[in-house]
Amino acid sequence: MKKHPNESNLVWLITSKDKLQVLSDCKDPKWKNKYIASTDCGVNGLGTGYRHDSITFKRVMYTLDVRKPKVLFVNFREPDFSGHKSDWNGYIRGIQQTDSMVHEIWKFIENDPYYQGKTAMFITNDHGRHLDGVSNGYVSHGCNCEGCRRIHLWSFGPDFKQGAYLNQAAELIDVNATVGELLQLHSLKSNGRVLWELFQ
Image (cartoon, rainbow, N blue to C red; front, side, top):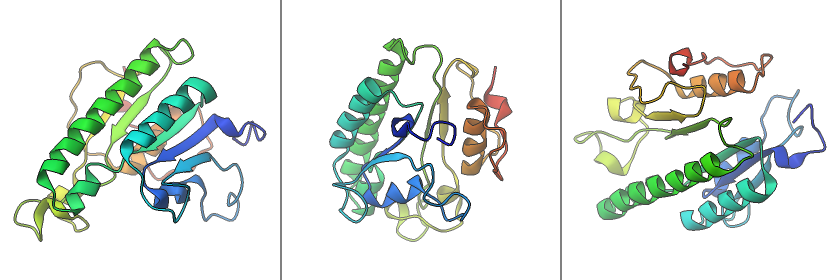
């Protein structure tokens, strides 16, 4: 964004959860209120409540098709939303529906000339959940149990190994560093490490 200050469509944050709009800015005085991503969060921005993932999915597809962002961050509320409601069937359904939407996004990327063969996609969760026997189980999260600390990461794109399964320790901040490497943002300050083991 700094190199293209008049192109607000370059970076988009599209989330079902309104509260995640805060991710479009930061607290560092050097960067606060500068180079802010375009946002489409919750019902109508910060403080307006969550919206259904089907709406977010439609907004994502429109943005990819029409606005052609260079960077797109997407958050779906499921399965976290149903998990917190202790709705096991909704939780499983939420996983399946989210998987289906993510697959549709990737199919679009793979078939659109603008993105085809030159786009990376990361899929991860922002946290795990309590293991069975810890507090109220899958309904919540937030402690240091193995369930809360363990997440998954899938990476797709021409730079990555195909069909490889890696079981090496990493953290969410490492995704940030890896995205910075892909975008050649070598001045990016990150406490994470580049996940070189993903690359071909």
